[in-house]
Length: 270
Ligand code: KIV
Image (cartoon, rainbow, N blue to C red):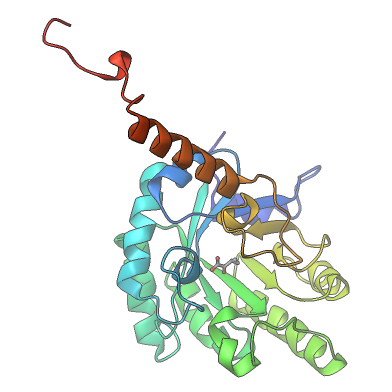
């Protein structure tokens, strides 16, 4: 498979017979290597604050942590497009700050693009990043970095006013030059309207089937966290159960002294 780029992502929207874009999150080398070439886009999401660090939201994730995890993921990818989240307050304060921080995610982390939450209010910053040669993926609807402003992880676009404001966000991002937009936690009807109105691909999470692509957190659809089962996640595997049963088997064999056996051991004469 050829290396997937921002150009491939854009082109996918208009290419004859193109299949929906497939995106997943990854935070480390092992998973990045496993998914490389199977999906089109890997996102180093700031969801690592919850999935890796065990926090209840993404707000405490730092730029240094994002750079570190992006470097780990980049080491495992050969074919798949790599985009990284700009963490909370790394792009909102000044345009100059956003440029410096996005630049570090590309030059030190090895990402090909950054993802930024927000619409109309952040469009000016996005325009500047794009002008400076930094590709930006937008993210609107339920934007997790605004969890407190939104009053929790609530589906957005339930009222006509909210829907109009999300459409305006999508149009502002398209004007600002994003190469794709994540639509999170909005009704399917709204993602259909946005997907039909804008020329860049939409990538949905909890936004129904009418987007140009889909993204999920890898650990969620692998079933690695049995306590987390939101409506928009389908479990494609039950790896929590598999992991626990493998660890139990290992612990039993160590305690019974049936592991390691001869084949797992080194000897002076072999
Ligand atoms: O942080 C993240 O993982 C995300 C995706 C789930 C869209 O933003």
